Image (spheres, rainbow, N blue to C red):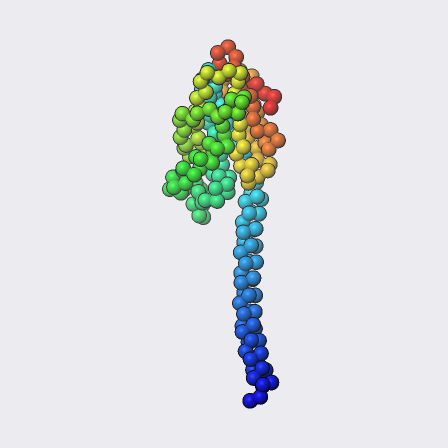
Length: 204
């Protein structure tokens, strides 16, 4: 075998290795593309979720603010990416809700807060949740001792999955029955000290 034949055979071996690698590279690229599509589809589905109106019933006094925060189970399920409803019926599943209770409570309390005008969060002193049909209801109490000036009640529930999410605030004990409607553009309301108690004042 002369030198040219040896070179040709050697080159053929290199071409065979390269051609065997090519299909593997194409498979890897295809798998990566599929994974990216799936991730994008999941994110798109989450962003496309249209939430229902959530609400707070708020009562205030000299040192504490109490809120009864109600959210739809389906909305919370979408926000947490955790199943909370039974397959088939779509009804809230107590066992699934109990399993995700800590995560759900953290989500709600991180997005419903009472703060001083300086932005300091008031301390959570009590919380608990219960199921009401297709909703979950949290009872949250904040203590804000020695407040000078006023407080702010802020809610940003579901803004991370629905830019059009809305939240209604109802003030208990308010003779005029005033309400506040929160959204992305306006998500807080002032609670100012008046006559040793806190009264809701709108303007934020």
